[in-house]
Length: 204
Image 1 (spheres, one colour):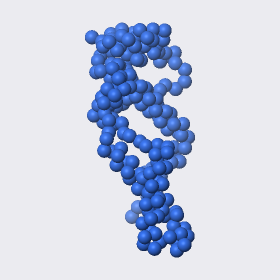
Image 2 (spheres, one colour; image 1 turned 45 degrees about the vertical axis):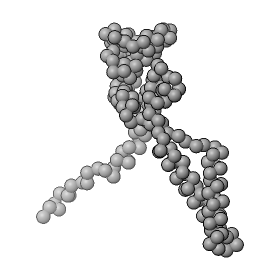
Image 3 (tube, helix red, strand yellow; image 1 turned 135 degrees about the vertical axis):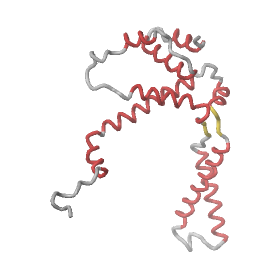
Image 4 (cartoon, helix red, strand yellow; image 1 turned 180 degrees about the vertical axis):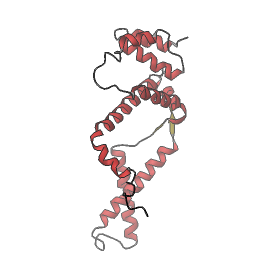
């Protein structure tokens, strides 16, 4: 029995047959359903045959789908959304700590007159204190995917579908990036090769 979301997605993408199929596959992964019996035939018609394909195959595609599906299924337990302060908020808190540190140092007799480069110390430590505050606040309140869906009114779990797409895309990009460096791998891997055995005649 397919969910209402699957039928909605099917109807909205009727003009793109391949996109429909992959959308339903993604939704089946999300909701733990089994793929329709007609999907195998549809995929055979829309995907190129191994004999008809040109160029090297892409053996990692099915594995990418697998790990993407695993990550999506683990989202309710492992995915968290954290707060992050940006822009003027960062500058405002950093300025506060710079004033605070400057005043504390001045109370101890440390000023720009006695330590002309003290501003570098003040700025670096103000950044550390700023990051400590924002990181602590972010860790103190984390949102699970169910909370984000409720807060945003996402009743069709489209956030999860979007995350599925982004995960798959970035995994494939990472694999292609590694594949593009194949020419440099022999040199990089040479340091991990097994050391050559003893030369003939050197055995005692």
